[in-house]
Image: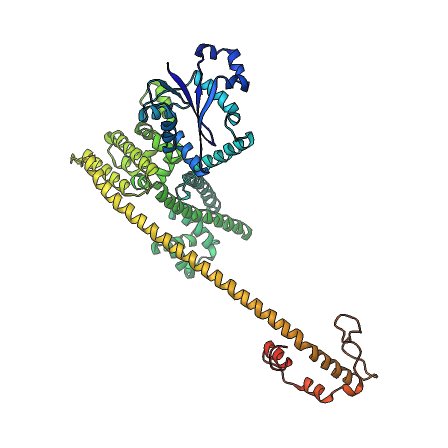
Length: 556
């Protein structure tokens, strides 16, 4: 008779349960399914055989990651080998996941079952698990599930910030939008300023340069030889600058008011700033593509590669596409229109903007687009799944496309793909080792910097503590030394203040804060000391003054 065991994976650990003799057909009846909700009836069917708690949260995370990927973890292997019967033919193991079941059957040799009665028993185990395991409460089981769930989610969504393709998608979308906006605004500047200086449109074709010239020239009637050098700096051509100067003298444009010129200059400044921001954004996109997809960038260019990633949704999605999909990516409307009308399907989509298809002959455009799409797929997969992304494979793939293009034109046979990939693997290994070496040195420098900062912070803290101690001692000395000084000042002050003169200083009364009490007897006043106190030279520092007042000893 085959004995059914059920493996249950919980956030607290692994549990192995034995199912007593039951009829599988009757177990699936609605009445029996409802009896699973009752622990007494369910306990008569299922008995806990063994429980293996996880040692730590890290161990639980490692085990759940292995289970989700269908890998038999070493803890689970040891648990099953220890508690399952030695006779494998008479043992049937019920598992919830088919992947882990296949892994157990392949590595341990136990026959595994999923679905059917196992699913119903697993539902009951999940409901009564905290009751089956001694010492496990419902609250602790819930906390374990919540903690493991958060750890598992964080591990799954954890990514390298230097390889985020979302920034590329946003950058290329903004770049396309900026191209449209700058073109529209430049046309508005041309039309607006063209009423005043229409000849400038034919002389200068670049929108950015035109806006800079419109801002520089302003009123064409005020343009003179003195501003010729400024024009040359903008157009980078002395002949063209001279042509602009000559055209301004014989222009057919209308006169324009100062307020109109102010608005044209303001709008031209906005267009210039947008154009400069677009240049910075393109540099940013180039750097991000070099970090995220260096092989794809080296093969087809940063802009086209970014458009492919944006259209696919992510680099991972692009890596999953076959070459036939990458070839027509961006030409979906034409494809479905061709399928609907039974016409010719498109040969290329976004990859048409690469230089290879434009350089190919008309009869070879379809062939080179198919070959290029194949290489783009390889490059995107290398970028997506490699640990240390490098542009070595992209450069080699680009060489292959160049050789295939030359083969279509001259008939020269290209190198075999196997030989090229062997060379690329050797170079990529060397580059990866060099990158890792640089990262290791960078980590060491960062560690030394942090240690130096920690030492400096400790030294500063020690210095502050010494300074605080010194200041406390000085305050005590000041308290001891200021008593006699205040008394002598009081004596001298009252000697100077005659009864018939108004005193410029306020005298604290007896009993008030800072009061010195009633004056001593007349005979106790020392006129000589009073004269010395007022005629003494000023001290060079507070510490010297306090030391002198304390009798030169610096303490009481």
